[in-house]
Image (cartoon, rainbow, N blue to C red; front, side):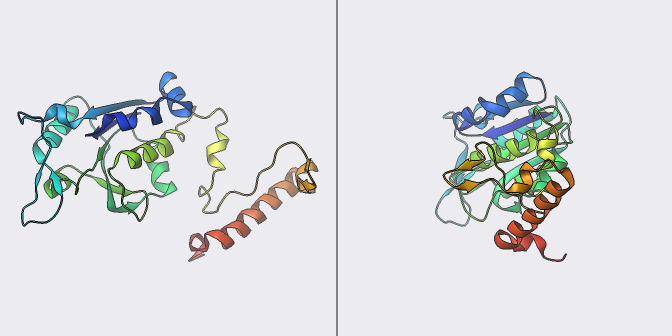
Length: 226
């Protein structure tokens, strides 16, 4: 998989992709992550990428030309399955979306900034608009990092135990159950006996019960319609 991220603040994306799972995924050839500075494509003498919005109002808007030129340059090199715009008014990111994106070959992620991008960029190029929550950030870079992490970890071979991603919260519509490790007893707080029993069927039943209980308590919205 190849992921191209378009931003006006490329340094914000250096750390998230240079450590841990994201770093290993790139080193092992499971994914290529390329960050592009939109300013490099500006034809403005001062490399400006924003301007005042028509109709008045506070805040600047990202202009068409540098974004369009960057996307067009990338499209000349390969076909893209999705061109995604990170925006507060996009669809809320869900696990099912991450699952689907993990199976494509190439995606572009455009990071918004200021008051957003000229609507015509969204009309002409964008195939999917995604938000990571009902709040506003200073730019789309952190959202792009979240989306990239959530997608890349699902690519076969990225995680040491490929079943790990399949047992994450939300994969089956439920939150994950409680997990424990050594010691068995910490100052009187003990690991549930069933997890020490070695009885796989009973352990699985306990985990399913705990997942359902936790989901009812913390995210009952996930059970609506069932």
